[in-house]
Image (cartoon, rainbow, N blue to C red):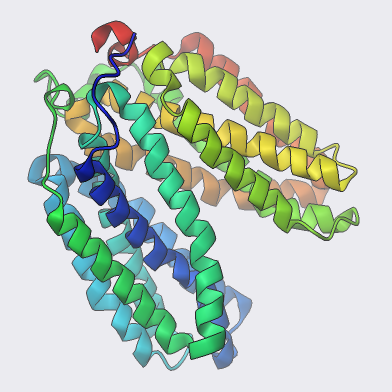
Length: 395
């Protein structure tokens, strides 16, 4: 069993976690940027392009800077991303249209976000006890969930009271707070995270069979795609069946994910990654099938709770599965790879399942999405290897 003598809640971990929270708050304020752009009367495709370039840049840059995180240090790379964001955010005050200039600024914020987010998460995990890697990832995920919920609410109040100029000012202040936290955090790479000298991540990848690489990459992509199908279309689906109060779905989803990560985030540290991934993905897949049968408000709430419960279990287990497979000496690269695969699934899954819903309707779309995840989950469970470091005996 895991030795519980070392606390996860050390002061350095909490300071780094606070730095990540402030970083996430700064970026989440920009969920209201489309309202700012509307005054210039852009097309929907223009707004979509400006908002979407942020994620595209973050996905593309993570694997590249993941190697730098491992080679140059988490703290230095995190500070570099934060400084880029702090240079870029004030320039939004100069935006006068919905053309090339805001597009370039959003691309730069995506670059800074992709760099600093991955480096800061890796720093947080380094500051946690090595035997509680998955638990620490779950807690970091909670900080992101809370920030993504509070950010838009705060942004809405700021815009109503003070205007968009203070939205950009507040984003900068959150970045400044994050910068101070990262500066105050002493970088620590624990002995258990330093690996065993078996080479870098690319060497590890070359030593894996094509089947293992496919399985390791496919489940995060499929999970991201199904997550996109679940949350991006639930409002449209609910309205189509006469359920116009969809907000509680997201509230119960977030609360379930947060609560699950507090008590269940470390389960895979005790019992192994695959032993948690399989039931977590099964819950998510069955819940998506359940969404296809929703007829009432209470069924909608139950669907949100079950979806959040499964999400709270799978993120820490699946992300640390990739880390363990590529070696903890390559944690920065492994984490950036996992996040890029998941985000790519989100980006590809939404239009794909949207196309299916156009052809067959929302209920059939959710059935196909749930079955897809369940099938991949069974294949992953039967064929994917259990990483050596994820077994309790190795701690």
